[in-house]
Image (cartoon, rainbow, N blue to C red; front, top):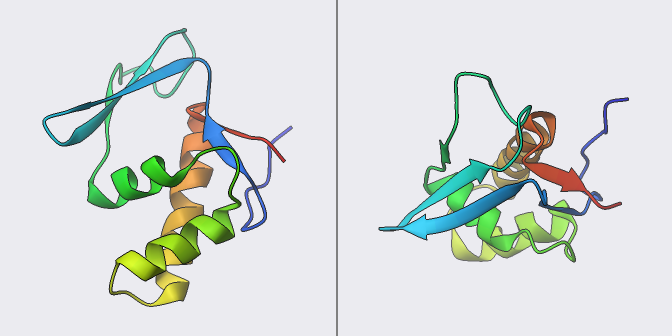
Length: 101
């Protein structure tokens, strides 16, 4: 069953990955087989992905994450919401994030 990701969803990193910041980049390393794509072993996040990742604490909804990021970045709130939803949906699909509720 595919989990729907909405602005009400609360996401957090999967227990099956480890993330580290190295020289300003977030590197995500899957700890078990079946996470992500077979071709990718490590994931690096761009600036947008890094900002979203650092805000996902398993407490805030994706809507709250988008609001927090709207206060930090000069961009349309709807665009930030779409970025947050797109990022979270992709990471949930790959097994890197899990939806808490």
